[in-house]
Length: 95
Image (tube, helix red, strand yellow):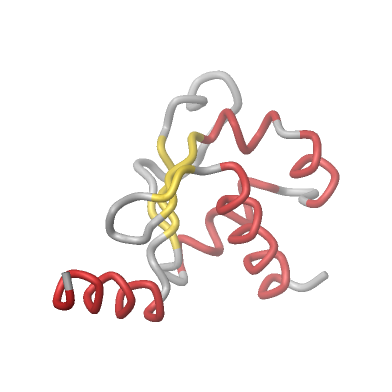
């Protein structure tokens, strides 16, 4: 699996484990991702995949390097896709 494929899988897992926010983003803590069995089986290097996604501005979190235990409560936010932003804006305009 290449980096792009891993980032796409990461987005799917964040949507599965996280909570959707009002702006269409998804929020999950590092500890939830790190300790999930499915994620452990998919990602050989979860921290590396998170960093790659952060560099591509797909998600955001505080800090540079996340470590199990120390950073379990750090929130990882998957930014809304352009389609979700449009849907959210349309809902506000129509509502």
